[in-house]
Image (cartoon, rainbow, N blue to C red; front, side, top):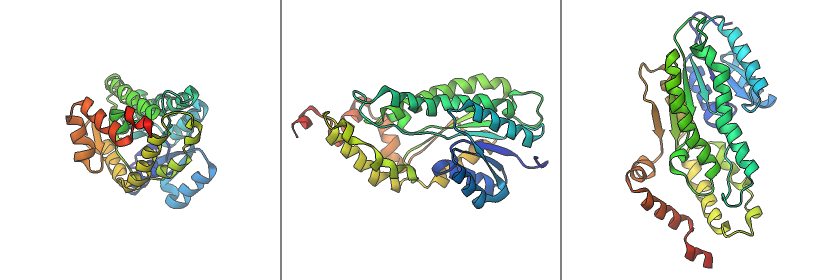
Length: 292
């Protein structure tokens, strides 16, 4: 049951990486954190680490039944008060050349990264203030997007498309939720040093061995393995999430990108055709590269 001075937040995908860092930062700042996980062992790890400051909840964002059950648990804890924030962080990254990738993999990408966000938002929006019977200030929704949703790098098309769609969904949602004074803030990180980069070796290039894309895919994966672990600390993202929830007037979108000038500012200023040309050359996607 909520104490009179403790506000609560819900974070999806909180077992590792950015979600875990958000849970850490917010719990240490005095929030009660409801942390979405999919495995019992992840729930136990969060309990061991944070004790009573964090309540793990089974929350697969592709499972409406789990989301509804989690929302009921949070509502009971709030005891008639509003939820301070929902951090839509859960996500996966599907990789492969778009000419050859299985459309079912792309469908799963959208099931998690876009429809999962919509399901979670619908489940928790009443607690953020859409239910006018609750007392307290309206909460805010933080959408975890990505620089990839703006740039569209090769071989991560499904991920880039899902994050690009999330940007549009967030902008529309922000306008619609003005009715309830519920804010929507987008955070678009670049490379963040999380365990997701360890999964680069799990990408099965071999299934594309009969295509022309294998050499360029290897170049991109090597880039991921060398650049990713040197990205921002996930706690940097956690601090910005806290700001998005607590600031009187946060910005509508934050781009948190390491080496910001070369990885964000310049590519956004240059003509898109020029950026494409540079990327294609670096990765090895020119017609002459077929001769290798």
